[in-house]
Length: 289
Image (cartoon, rainbow, N blue to C red; front, side, top):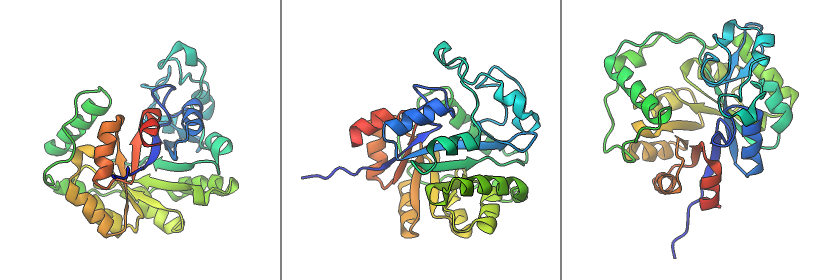
């Protein structure tokens, strides 16, 4: 008799097929449906307030325009983050990090993607093509290549030699202060690239870290070990079975970005994925139980 392996399910930007991504309704829907984790993205605004939004700008998800880090809290909180998703969600605001903690702190594990503040321009054509592939498949719902790659792709030297200064400590301290205010150190982990993980290791070594550095460059495991991470967050477009085995040999928890169908998720889980990031947590929850 076969035993079904049940992964942990992480609601990517909340349950974002039924509510606007990265909003309180999306997070509450995911929590109510029993998601093991919620994932969301953080940026500081012009006043240092921590705002939950995936993109560096508000253009795609709200009725506003502009980069978050130069906009005031008042302007950002006055935007409508629901109307583009559906008129039924008109008036939903961009949440602050504190609002998420106040609502769900201590109730559900939080995968906090701290977005890099400094990102050097990429000129390598192969990496730019990888980025376009990911955008086409994820944002534009194009068909994805079938499952795991047979072998690793080339490691692009330009990406390995990027000069990323460590994430700003004053901003990171605000993140820590809020986590401590809501007594959530054991309920969160930080996901990010090298700049974020370097600062996290220095300032909060006790809080679990999840590596994104090298996730599109087939070097993620090496970076995870260098930065003393507990997890890796693989991108399914740049992943081999051998990489999952290597991660487990090094006692790393394997997150997967992303899967929205039970059939696909089951395939990856059977290959060793521990946590599945999903936009459709109900479909996967019904399948895995």
